[in-house]
Every structure is written in structure tokens, then in C-alpha cells.
Image (cartoon, rainbow, N blue to C red; front, side, top):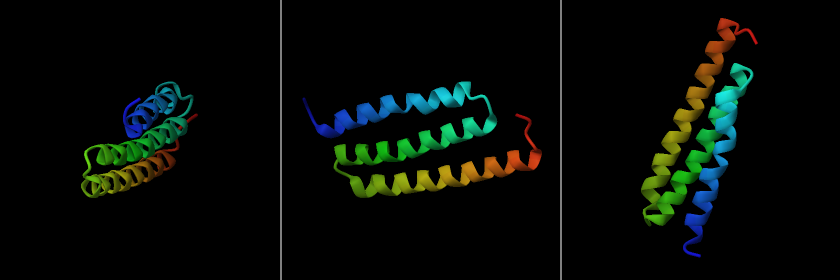
Length: 89
């Protein structure tokens, strides 16, 4: 069957399709924002799995943490922007 991390990574990559659908077809801007944040969270886990596969987890955890912080700050900034603009639903 191979390395279990490869199987888990493939399943996680397939699961990313579900929030991607919400990003593309979301009825409101906030649904799209939540979908993008969910994709970012799953990508952080995927980066850690890649770190295990390359046996360089210490480097990939730093990359994953940086990506997580950027994802969080970006989500907050976009939410504040749309809240300030008064987006019509």
C-alpha cells in the first residue's frame, strides 16, 4: 500500500475539493471567505505531511507555521474589509 503519509496526503488533497466548491459557488462573500480559510488550514497539514515524507519536518513546520499566520492575518483583513464596506448579500 505504500507509505501511510502518502495515502493520508492524497486523501487530504481530495478533501480540499469540498471547501473549494464553496469558494467557487458560495452564495455569499462570507461563505467564500470561510472556504478559503478551510483550504488554508488543510494546506498547513499537507505541508507538515510533506515534511514527514522528506524527513525534514523541522524545516517544513516553520514553513507551515508561517503559512498559517499569513492565512489567519489574510482572513481577518479580508473580513474587516468586507465588514467595513457593508457587502450586500
